[in-house]
Image (cartoon, rainbow, N blue to C red; front, top):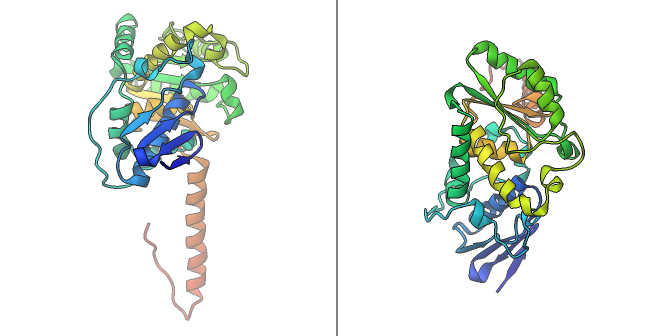
Length: 306
């Protein structure tokens, strides 16, 4: 049996087993699991016969032997034939989400990340308790606190300004606010006093920490269920204003598209710095090529394909 190691992903190729042991934040575990599954699929051109992720979500366990995948996900027996390579890696949390391979990833999410009946039941209870009208609701998903150690956090005013624009377009829009940072909630409700907030999801004063680290160990598995359910609710709203990170990424993946998604990334909305650079590079190359060809034996380039 040949063992291949790839950043906390162990593949026993002779037995066609994929073992993923990555542990970090809640949706970080989702991202690494998906990355491993897609990597195996692209490499071997078929799915692994067995995927062992029992060691994941260790930060949410009160008993290390627990397999929380059984709590969070339900089994699906759909088949995924290999037709082409699918693109996904965990650092895509920090790309422009319009670049996600939604079509290619959809069957993987359905097969390996379908919410359990427990999670779906909680999500349904939130819909009823908070009377959420998805068509007329804009979700506001702001991840602060320790996320500042990984990326540049949006100023509160950026999210508030975007919300104002949406409200100006449709006065009937209500805001569903999900944040881990108390100060953001306070700032947002100063501008919009009446908002929906899922009270079962805690928030805390700004600090370099995470919600699960602040909870008693025995409460963390249940928090995972509640947070998963809340994210599903956010994903179904007609508009979604989101940060860039694993939480925002999975809200968009469960949404299935970037329609009416406003993503804060690298100090701007929606478009990543990398994409801006590529656009600039393309323009500059065209300009320089045009100058070169204009002086080439009298030939002038009149147009370029876009």
